[in-house]
Image (cartoon, rainbow, N blue to C red; front, top):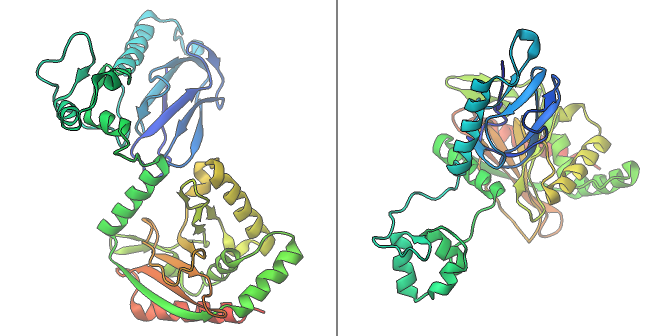
Length: 370
């Protein structure tokens, strides 16, 4: 009997949501058929069956699951296994039922609260912290009953009263990345003033030539990618006392269209034309409005370009994304065509002199455009 296990889809999430089963429990499947959809903090992925046979669900849709967890089994007749083996079916049914009555909380799930001492039989069970808040604010019990909950926690009352703001799944992922970065990466920062006049003229000319919007994002992605060969450590990842070098510049670009911060990746950016980079970024901006990303769109960056070109921003200090060594902050010109472009870098791997050499090389590329 084959097992369907959840693969590790990224380095930031420890749990994924099993959104839906594409194949019903007890139905036949073939190897490589897509059978389930799991959702990470930023993308949805379809999982294929790795064998042919009859699919038996172990985890219900809507439950949280961890990497390498078994979420289904596939019984194959050819191996002498019976798809309707009573013991197997009973075990799987018990597992699904257990998940149904005791769902695993998500990453932001509330901690258990002590129950109130004497909950009334006619209403919901109210935890002691929730009851204290209800009494303190004089909340009518009719409003509590109207929640339709069997168990009322303090957070339920706060949410009802508009006292809490739930972080979106995307923002929770950002929070985890920022926390990990600040905890594990000793970052330094350096800014260089650049004249973007030639770059802006070049962007306008390229927009007309390739019939795609070309701006500072596209210009800096291409310029940074061109420095990969001369500055390999800036695209490396630190592993203890060893730097793992990359074979190609895979440039992540921050995209925030109001639905959350995403960092899609332009893979092998040095081997792409301006039109290809512009087309890819345009697709990513559209996907950011709907969250319609695949995990492969968001993984594999070895350098990140962060965009701060709106709202009169004159200086930005990005965090170094875990798994990378550098993050370049691009701001728009404020007076005339001059802007301060900054580099945050992992000081364990890169020293200030090398950072200055990199930024001056980048300035030479940018100011050499026309």
